[in-house]
Length: 323
Image 1 (tube, rainbow, N blue to C red):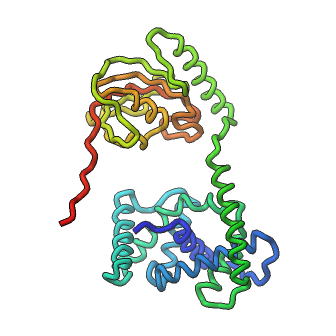
Image 2 (cartoon, helix red, strand yellow; image 1 turned 135 degrees about the vertical axis):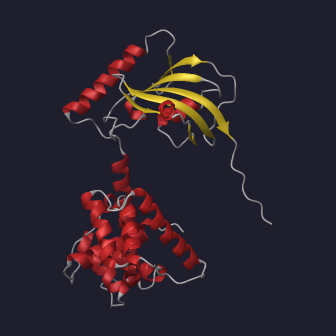
Image 3 (tube, rainbow, N blue to C red; image 1 turned 90 degrees about the vertical axis):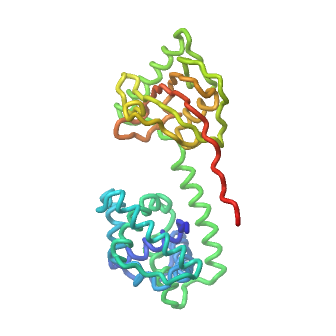
């Protein structure tokens, strides 16, 4: 069962406020306070309906610990294998509950609670930044969950939720906008990549796409070309423009399989041009690679080079037939 972000957000903030000893809000003065309270009352109602006895079932301290570790420390105390195991247990139980096949209880609720909170909390905080007053949100949650008289009428709640939706949309648009290089090193990475690609574009045998992605055919293929809906199997080697290798399926002696749309944009665009059996060398501008998002072995704003060998297009998965 897929848990909605707003439901999880409600659970996280409820427990964080309980752990941190949030003070009561008795008057709603600013618009952010009203938005926070309105959001809290609605989510509190949904939370009670979705997971009865939420705090008792999941373990509030462990849940709050999981939120804290991910949002503040940036890591969880369990390794990835254990995290997948525990969150899988939670989702299985939620599915059973939805199908009315059991009650929501866990043998090791503290571990399950922690893992679920930690694995899902990393993407939630940016959504709320600057949108609402957190203390008022907590008060709305508390009032709604405990069945108290609310400080806002239903019509006021709905009006504030419209403003909440507008603010969230603006936040998302702002965060999805491409970031600019700011530090001296980022600006150097950007310029080095641009200079490298400008020089490479003049070399013999280099072809250019309208996006600025460059490629050179090392081996011609004669098979079909992938589409956006396809999954492909490839061998590849990735390097920075200085020649430093950051990834290689050849070294792992195992080709990679993924959907055409499950990779960086430069790859998605180039794969649709490659016939099966081809091997190309591809030069990708930073904005069609990882852009400002640095990876452990890839600095921010780096242009990337890939040797890509398209081995095959995988057949679509067969859906099980009903008996």
